[in-house]
Amino acid sequence: MNYFTKNLKFLTKTRINQNQLAHLMNTTRQAITSLLKTNDPRANTLIKISEIYNVSIDDLLKKDLEESN
Image (cartoon, rainbow, N blue to C red; front, side, top):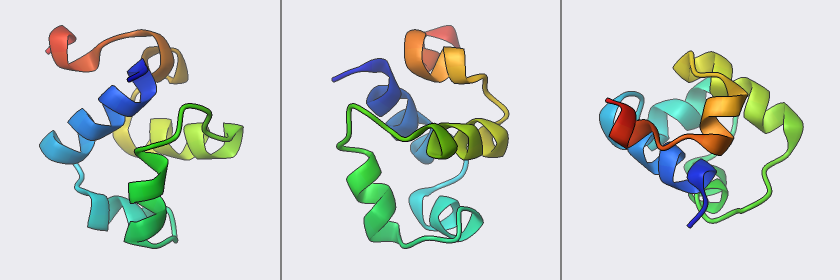
């Protein structure tokens, strides 16, 4: 599992859940579930997620956010 997947799972469990994230991103929960399985998210998806969770893209991709808390 890469940092993005691990971090998104952590963020959806501790902050904004998958249903809320889907609503904020104007997509479906199934799309979020699929996103949790990807190793290569699109740039516009990374931007939206970083803005929603107020986390830098760099941190999403290169840092273990769970260990940082």
